[in-house]
Length: 237
Image 1 (cartoon, rainbow, N blue to C red):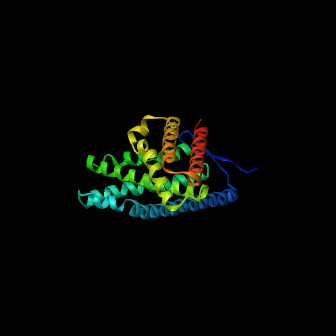
Image 2: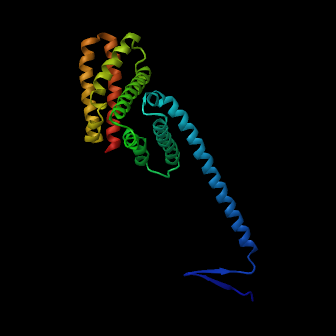
Image 3: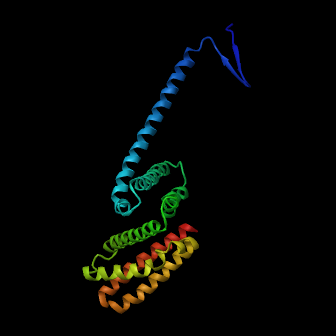
């Protein structure tokens, strides 16, 4: 009969077995798997860091250039920006694998999260600069989104009329949307309701501008936007 030797370490009891070659082999394989996983994580982190740095250069280069409190201050701000964008990339990857919830991803992806991370480094003037830049980005992104949808839903709208449609929509839809204090005070459902009202106001204005087929195409496009808002509302309920 083989002898089992107990080894006491504090309150933990480990059992060793003289014939443990198979266990040692399993342990070696397990350690190799752990090392491979850690190396994969390091490579993934490095990848997200490199991508984040490039994104900071493209999206925030003008903002960083506008900072006027020395190179060290710029480096601190740039470091936080890179860290946040890298975190977003990592958590987005985790979300696709079901490792975090959509709510957690939405939180770290929000502008408020980025602003809070930078608030201890930026003075009031720099925060205003960041806010105004964010508003400009929101308008640019909204224009692109609306134009893509218009091209898909009502491609027959003429080019001059497209510019008019975009300008009117931006005027109505960003009236409240670019106010961060307002966004923080309302629920998602209330924000959707506000946007529906804004679309109704835009519709009234379009009826005063367009006639005939072009008006029908614009209304068709507005109905698509309205349907999308109702869809978003149902998903939030």
